[in-house]
Image 1: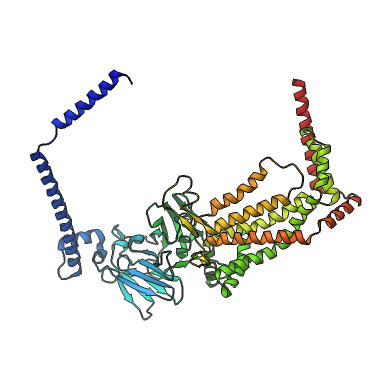
Image 2: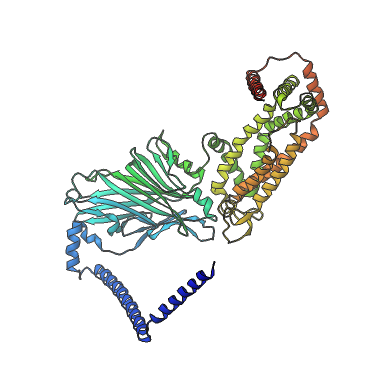
Length: 633
């Protein structure tokens, strides 16, 4: 920067300072501004107080039928017709409860405005409330005979208690004789709330073409667990077609979906609990909407817009059911037994058990065993015993895999002789063919070791799906882990670290760390025992050691119960490996393989024939490439 430029910047600065000083307000102007702002604040407070007083006066007038506001009454009658008298009322609640649920039904809208699960608490030991107040909304749209549109959410219902203390009728009066009833029934020791809609004397009040009513249901999903990331991954809007499978909207982003087929039920589901609205006759013309929230304390916002059959004459009842409860597989599966023959609710699909074969393994094997163990043992011991049972079932596959690697290991000196006889990249195909011939004559096969390991993977992945979403693990402690369904942090921090916090989290989980260390040890042992003398792909060793580190990153925020299972499983595998090595005499094994060489050659399998054919084709391609290179030279 030269001298003239510096002088220029200094002069500009002096001009700006001088301009600001010359245009500063006088003390009188400053005082006038302060006075004006004070007057504005006072006026704003006065207006807010006036609005509050007006609202209180309106409520008071609404509560005193002898002193109606005639102007407001005329406006209400013009807008709502015979429903005008239901525009005012007391915003009170009627409570239904049993051993599992506490339900509060609001006079305004006649809707369920509060649902608490008695057997559960949040991660910070507060009552587990699915929703309250305006966190959930329910509305029916009615069209009158004079083409007025009326929303039940704006109207006040009158509670009518029956002889059964767990049944209440929320009645919407329509004129002198007409009414719309919402009947709620909560059976003892049940998570189902039965919900029926009945009409009485509405013929001539509602549009004569009415044969259905529009329903709107919305709910903000609360964060109930420790660790927002994993709870959010399992929070979604699910639905079941009337005669088809259960599906769900995208759980990672906003999505809206219009359905033409009839829908049996719609569920607003979080990781461990769900609010489900079930229709006996099905929903039609359904629109589903899911929005991801960034608000503290809330995960997502779900909404349902649909149409229900409705009998204007009052002869038929529109029947529905609410399910407010845990995503517990055995509980949800039991509701299928109460359905007509050949009909299933399939609420158990709300429990994420994986797809296809993984779900079958969980349903048919793991869940029955795990439920049985949990009846008699603590959760930590049950997981240990489950791991032991699974490893015992898979023992033959593990043994066969080890035996295959042992065969190849004792043949290693002979493989190294082949490598010495056929050195160089140009003889790679000949070297590989000679090695495969050796394995074939001795009765060893690289594939026989890989296949048993692949057959064990479905169990590994099935439990990866089951444990993080298993409510049985929720708030169950074991050793230092206070909640086996959440991470067990031994070190935590609040600072946001790019690339670390989004994937690894702001903590270190001990079970996850132990699992990674044990897997690192197992990898080292396995790599040493799997060294068969064959040339491996470059970087393969490094890749094997990277895997435990990747597991540490991906599972650090997952359920500690899952990491505990993998930790125990890896320990058992290491113990099995050492026991196999102790009991299998490799000298006798080598003698057996040498004896196999002397036997007549067996007919090669179709797989080996295809493999040799591919090797020949590849060798021919390499020869052609080498010939082309020589010509260019």
